[in-house]
Length: 306
Image (cartoon, rainbow, N blue to C red; front, side, top):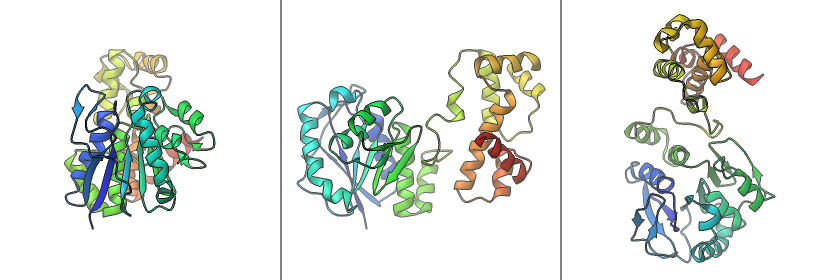
């Protein structure tokens, strides 16, 4: 059975919050039927491009529907417009269907704030983009707001961190609704190397330590990211960075606050966890990530947790 997906379109909608999940669902062949609804027939987006052919808000949604609330570029502004007010009252009317889970709600980025303003997140575990966490807590003081999460589900309500995490959540829902083969096929088509889970941090090791400008450290990080499973020696990494091993060690501590070894271990842990989530055994996951054995992987996980 084809699942109807309804995207609520408001002025200022973040283009990728909408198009990322939309393209993901479209690639699942005929499993999903997409609709774009809202108070206006045409809305400006975050990238200056107008989107049109938007249908009016329907009175009700059929059971089994997936309702998507994308984020907007400025939630303090665009969620306080006459159009947003109309959507809020419409969401309130849908509240019984959402709470009895005949409709699945998917919020991308600050879309969670819109859901909160409609009273849909009271007592619900939820998340949003890290820049909007404080606003979500203020709007929904009784919600169980989780920080640094890619996405989370509670009683049929899914919330996500935004931008690319909307794609992660869409893939996860495809996996849930249409099975792992369809989700894996879509991920391959999109060239998504790692499908993150809801428990993954919003700012993973791939990005967390890149907020610096030192070219030698960037060269070392690029080399490690390209081949994290390689049996790296400090001298080999330093050679890629064009500095001495001793100097590279100082640079990592100065600019990243961690050692070269710890940085590489964090990258490897991400790969191992993804392999385990995709159904690989501990031996395969450890080998794929560059650990010598499952025991070494277990020790690395324990060190990270301590």
